Image (spheres, rainbow, N blue to C red):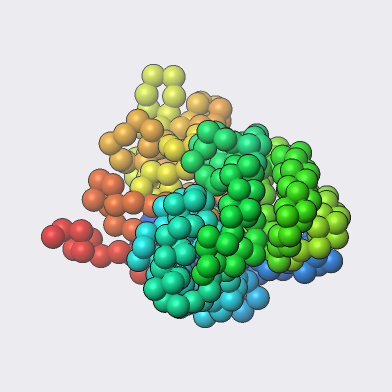
Length: 411
Ligand SMILES: *Cc1c(COP(=O)(O)O)cnc(C)c1O
């Protein structure tokens, strides 16, 4: 179900004509749909109902406090990768017992804070980190639940910049080293090894990499059972992709669910998921105004007031986000049309079309599917403030994060 729709040539998100919001809020701004967020979370949960997993929303995909509070109400936990994200999850009211902490470079300060809060799992990514956790746990006189992030050396068949599960990626520990750690678990008096975790990448549309991961983990789990390690959890990470254009198929959650159900039964563990994009990706759009149309040899640029600092995915990954006018008209311009931002970088470009409707100064456009890794990857490059975030709930909307004051950057 998709809550972004044209009705009579006007683009609506839920029951709000987006053009109405532009009369009150300065562009660019991020616009979210609460119904879409709820639908996505509940749909994910329903798809895995027989597995009854702990769903830990990946806070790095969207760290807006209000959105995370809404997910908390639906039963979500959190997957965090920094002390900042951990504090946001706690502030949103998520129980520490539903929080997992991932990341290759957790500092002493971060580990100390997480240990004091007694979160569900710290997913460690190196032997050195495990030694650090043991030391800090000892200082705090606490037994800490630790998961080991496995690097299964499996290609996610996604953009190489968001692939994380190959042996030359910085993430995780090889199965051999993990086995050694489990063999020597008695070196770590203050650690209870309760889980292994994997996360092989993001925007994965194909089931096969997940199949390979499940097989590899099942085999590994059999091995560690033999040395007396019986895990409580296996954390399967996130990574399920979403369609970014009409020609993209949906990822088949049901098919994945059937595989995971079998996996859960053979391995006799609780399952944790860490979805980000599939929960919040299509819950957000970026609304922008045309500053200037600009004719150039053989093409037309549409310079809009949103830029790579608001949405870096096209510049960083070559991602394509569809752009729609807020108001459709019938005057098609049959010319290569490229949407670009005002930032002084050639990579500050969004998408090109062979033809597009005529756009003039002051017209508004909507950049689709920016709920994940949109605002959370934003920057102040070119001394541009962070844009406001607005949440729609049926026929109402409100600002859930104010536009950053420009003055806060002039100091
Ligand atoms: C980024 C990340 C996720 C979320 O990935 P999505 O592709 O957004 O679902 C989950 N787990 C870990 C460890 C991550 O780094």
